[in-house]
Image (cartoon, rainbow, N blue to C red):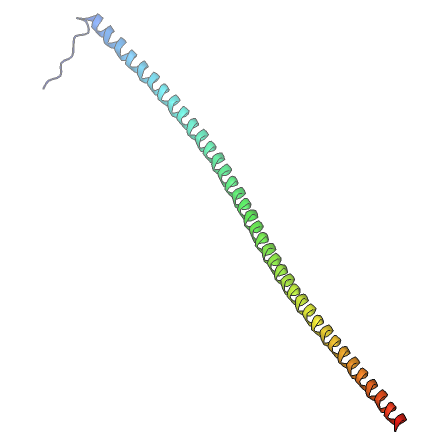
Amino acid sequence: ASVRFLDSSSNPDRLHFLHQSLRDLSSDQLRLGDDINREVARRNRIDAETKKTLGELSERLSSSQRQETVTERVERRLQELEREMRSERQGMERRQEQLGQMSVQLQEALRKRDSKADETEVSVKDRLFRSESEKSQLELELELG
């Protein structure tokens, strides 16, 4: 393997062509480097914007989840209050039922007492009538006898 150099004096156009190609390649390389740098900067900017947007979305999601949590707590408390109110209402209904039963029992007891009082009154009147009858008969016997 040997290295051969072209004689620069033999073909000046070729040397000029090579020099021009080298400059073009160098220019293309610089342009490509600039393009790559711009693309990297653009992508970095897009990445930063995406991260910022994701952060905002994450914050909104967390906020909405917290709001849902507050909503869930409010809903749970409302359900607890409904259960308490239902329990109190059932307790009041039971008490009213008991009071109604007591009222019925008291009315029955009053009827029985009134009935006994009536029986007692009839019995006392009957005895009084018999006593007066006996008294009248005794008085008649005394007057006759």
